[in-house]
Length: 66
Ligand SMILES: [Zn+2]
Image (cartoon, rainbow, N blue to C red; front, side, top):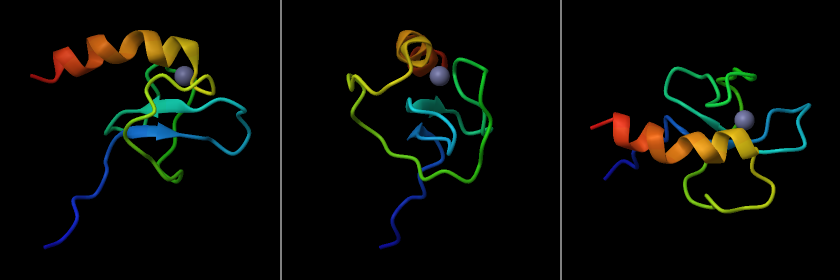
């Protein structure tokens, strides 16, 4: 079985100290970052390293996908 490619999740842009949540279109939830090149991961939604704005918008984002 082929592992599904993660198309959205948390990632660290190279010049950011915080992790931002990137959507499938490559833009962060806080709209300050855009990247297709950072490795993304799921989970760690409560990490203190996460961008506060991205964390705040994540539940809304998850709901809007359905
Ligand atoms: Zn962010």
